[in-house]
Amino acid sequence: MNRHALETVTGPQSTEEMLQLQRLSMLGKLACGIGHDMANLTMLLGFRLAKIEPALAHDPDALKLFKEVVQTIGTLQELSRRMVHLSHERRSQPCVVDATAAVRSILALFSGACGKGIRTMVSCPAVPANVRCDPVLLEQVLLNLLLNAREAIPDRGHVSAKVSLCTLSGV
Image (cartoon, rainbow, N blue to C red):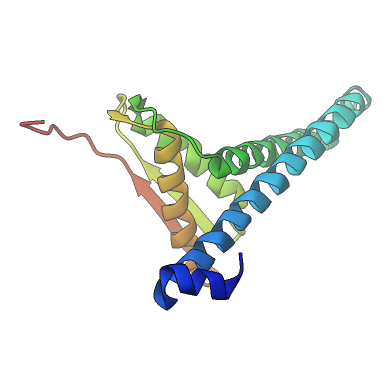
């Protein structure tokens, strides 16, 4: 959109806001495209690796390493799925979600993306911590918080997440 036309219609301050929104929209579309391509490539890689596994049956060390690679590919596939999902506009779909399971799942995904100097820890109750929310939005919020925490750590440290049970009255 022409910048001068935007300023005429919306005013100079709103023009900057509109341009920022356009940049964010383009970034979302780019993330979706990258996520889609990553998902396709990791799926292809997984198919090719499946053909190698039988040849490693005689070498336990190689088989262990192979399984770690397959697990890493699974993590990459999950990240790709979330990138694609994140960039699509969607309506909130609240339901009952076990916050404990959500935190453990995100932390497992997150810990695979951390450097060797960053440890992750989780403290959760032994029973489900059910909350009513949109599970996708919960995952996005948790992942964003964890990524922000990781960015605040220079080289070494730990990131921890904790789920606690509480009861809200009057809700």
